[in-house]
Length: 380
Image 1 (cartoon, rainbow, N blue to C red):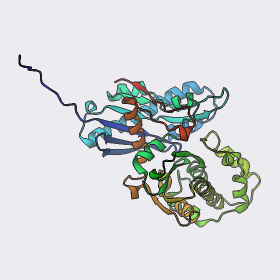
Image 2: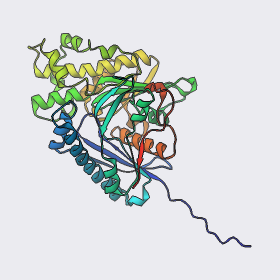
Image 3: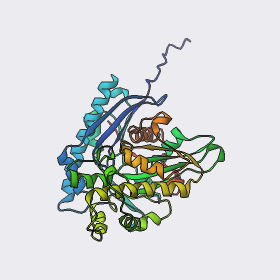
Image 4: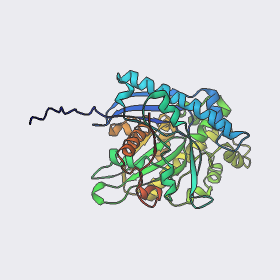
């Protein structure tokens, strides 16, 4: 008997990654071809001022915050959906061509390990609405399973960094300069050593907040304002006295700790430091925290590759380079990935891992009890 059944070939898989970080400036999106990792489209949508202000308020307890959080989540996801539609239009694809969206959400609280030994992490999101608005499966709530397994739930991007940026012959460090700075230590693959990663401390969060307060801009463009000031060593020493910097990994942090009130508390003892010198000192704080952790945990590092919005701050990049003599300091562009794409690409990659039921965390980074499949799937 002749078999008359036809064989169909599955359409190529595509994934979308959406990331809005602690800088609270907007959402980065990428549309990636699963077969070879090529980015077929990218998009960035800034947050309206009203949403950004609401997200900032939600970083701390406030009146009627459950209601405000729900409305903010819906507003955030409408921007996410707009970003998705922009990506599809640019790539010339339809919703049916995309397997899933990895939507990180907006972190508003991050308290792993506290209260009951587990703690929690909270990413504001409305993934069911995103699935409804886009017609695409959504992978969300990506951090909480790692926290449930005793981990920090952050950083999660080191697994992607390992897949993309590791080298057989040299130890590298990949550093995300977002609202919070974090590093991934990639030992030379030939050594067979585990990957490490953790949050160093503040990145752009304090810098952006101080610039908004004193020069009326959402960030210090290129670090040009900070370049005109000087480091106040006494203030820098006081900032560096924060106990978090002396904690050993695994560790993670966020705006729960490094916020405007934290800075103002320290500044109360230094009333004569000018605003521009505070900005320059904050650059030194970020650079010092990052460089100290590189020298402590990756003394054999040959290449330091930065990503995130902080790479556009040349004063910050130069301050880091000055503290890492003998180390090549560049952006991930040198490794083939534009620095503004790395985080969004990582969450597209994590969505793909979730759909394939493959672990997405690195226990050596987060401290979780073991590898875990990350994320919850909201069907289209």
